[in-house]
Image (tube, rainbow, N blue to C red; front, side):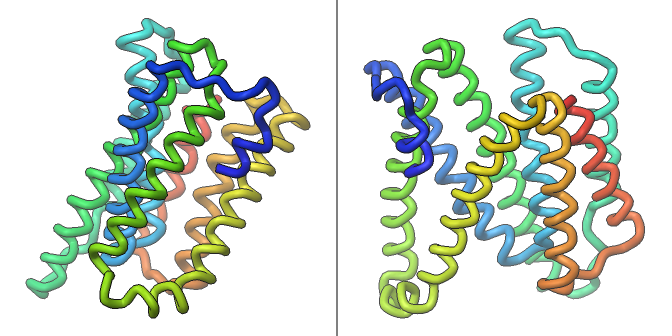
Length: 244
């Protein structure tokens, strides 16, 4: 949120209609954030993040069918690779009933989060078109303020008895996540000024998935089947193609 306040150069303008888009987007952001947390607690970090990255499909579909945008061969090839990637990265067969239950919990959480994340992108694009890109920072500030309040209230209701423990031991992770997010946004801004967006966007998508996969292997010690590794590689290629 601080990033959007600092980078605003034209003064703040909040048309009444902007609140409608911002609140809807805020609800989607909250749902996606909360269920992503649930999914990561019971499923693969790398595969979860890969599936969430596919949320850009919603923007592509919105552009093709509602804005009548033209698609090139890279778009269709990228979509096809995503379908193959999803098939290859499906979970392992588990014999334990408890593991099946956890896998089902992960599946429901990640699918709803995927939908929320994708629709957030669509709502964001709708407001950009509606206000001719003049209220992007204001939109994001409202969304993030709304989300912070709702998610804080949700945390208090679910972990109210352990508030002190959560604040004491969880603050460092919250701060690190905030710093990481801020640095990421700043680096995106810097890179976009150094190289064409058409080149920066696919590179960023590919690097993001590769780093995510390395973190899952080196830090979380996740184990993958060969087909799942192939699925991650195909998914990375798909994201690069869709961003060309």
